[in-house]
Length: 340
Ligand SMILES: [Mn+2]
Image (cartoon, rainbow, N blue to C red; front, side, top):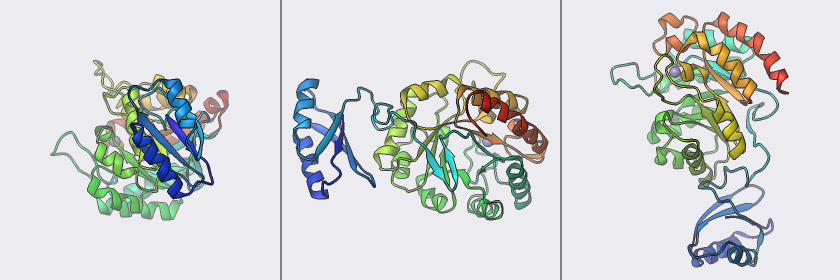
């Protein structure tokens, strides 16, 4: 149950509502917003829905009581029927305009990053991606430049004006990454790392939550709920492909997840055709398909020399290929009532 508290209620009065809810047997998760406070009250066994509703509506300072019979509440469409948007600088994710995030998989050098940043900006990308801390399946492969990579990303933002998105892998890095990044990315391996989710819930920066490679959509939305409960409502989802029996592609890009998320939630959704396919040859096609199905943004790996990339070269497109894609996407966006 979501309990909407009246605007004029004081902190003390809100505390009284919380205490009463606990006495009634509910688990209590308040979110204090700028405008008003809402409380997710979960549980209360033995309560008939009608009785509970009457009881809750009778509480002082309660404006509305919304029943959500899903394992997630705040990220559910029932809680917020309109699509929510996340603003980063002057870029809006989840609005009419489809946002393009592009850049190298991993920051490798100043030259590699700045060359790519300038090129993707010139082609029309509005957010720069780049990994500083890289999760790797193999402990022997490149693990990223760390803090030096973050500094290079900040330099690229300074020069191009593009906000940056980069991954945070460990709780101990959150503060450092948040000091540089405009959007924090939670990778597929950490989607169910509840410690990280709780911590990024407390920060004041947007978070892009990638779908776990074997996660059901419901589990993914529950993971997003963790961030929301912490008080951070700037959550973006990212479909990056799931693991199936197929091996020709690195993952199976689940574009139906865009529609599923749209049906179930108000959160903006990004599609990653690079990780989703693992093949540079498929990125343009899947990018167009993602825009056609209604993705709010794409995140694309671009490298000046994919054959020399330290990571994910096979799924990175060249600058000319990215330029071409950016001339083809507006027509697709327009066909589905969006712009680019
Ligand atoms: Mn990558």
